[in-house]
Image (cartoon, chains in turn purple, orange):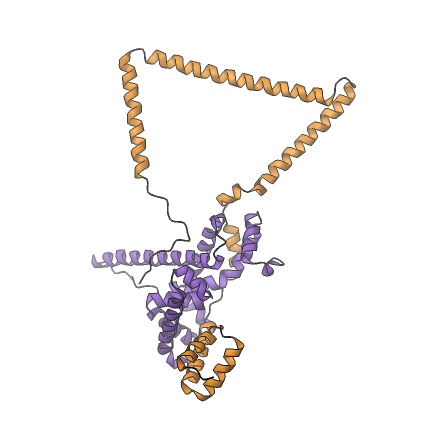
Length: 194
Length: 194
């Protein structure tokens, strides 16, 4: 990271980028890349796709950076763009599935299952089994809980930002996160004991 | 002070999110020492948090550099004053050179030919160029007018041309009406997927 970038707020970095300092956008990318890739990976279940989409999200945000409204947090905006992009990606994937299923009905043998959870990222970890169990538990959550859990735990957004992003009352966000965590706990009970 | 158990349950959640004040944390600890339910809940949530953190995936090395390399020129960059720095610098350099040349030449020619006189001559040249341009433009329009008069020598020809222009206008209006509204800006929220 460029010297001093870690001391600058998001708004200061954006002001510098809009002032013509392109390198500062790299600082912004570095600040959010981990959270964004992890968030997208949990939604898409494919690490390559998550990287690809994270890159697209950053490019899209850069294209319209002059329209960023500083009354909202940059992270709220970034994750809203990311969520929209991920939803579009999932829809495209489903459309592809439908068309492949039709081809299948016409007699052609095709593998049209959803991509299985990417095993690669856990390959080098001791806790591969735990990672896969966590992913299954997250996938099993109803969407309304899943998206909040991902925004909170992988996007690391505070409650207030999630409420703003989802246009929900703060109390609803807290309640849904509580319910979501309870569901995760139940599904992962075997991994949460001594 | 004794509190309702539900309050402590909420504090357990807040603690897992790192939102509990030290004072409340101390009170929660005192309560959990006596309450097995809260103790188990705290332990389970702490483990869930740890599980979420330890299964995070790493971002590919060089991700930031790839994003910055792929950044296309955004529309707003072209409008930024920084973009004009180079043309301004070139203009100032050329102006400086011209002034130096004019100064040197006037010194050789003697005091009667001053820089002011040279600038006035340049002004005259610019005025002559403008007049010539305006004359050419006028002549072109006159030529077009003559050609039209030659083509539209009967009222029938004039009516046919009027009809043609009207049809083209209607076509243009219908095309403009059919155009879809612009896509929503990135901060807009998409509907969810289930």
